[in-house]
Length: 88
Image (tube, rainbow, N blue to C red; front, side, top):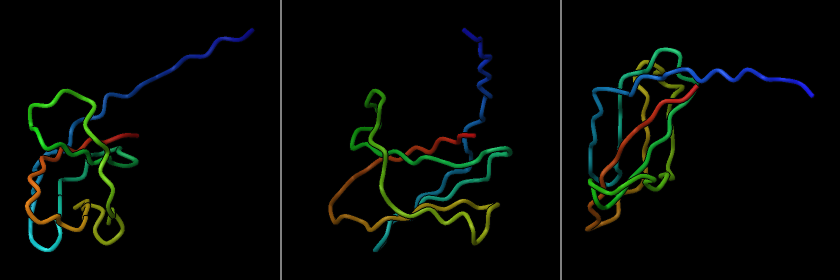
């Protein structure tokens, strides 16, 4: 039997999150230093307990890694709330 040390880094939360709604919903945020990726979640209730639903859509981290972006097609009449987490 062996032993394993598990280290979980504390990742800061993305800040300066901006949501633009039109034909698409586009969410942008400031890059988190050391993050390997991001997950976008949504809910129809901003006060809903976790877990929120992981959103589908398209990440665009290659065009400008300093301004991570996520986009999905907007649903007419939908009222969603979004949150973004960073992970390593």
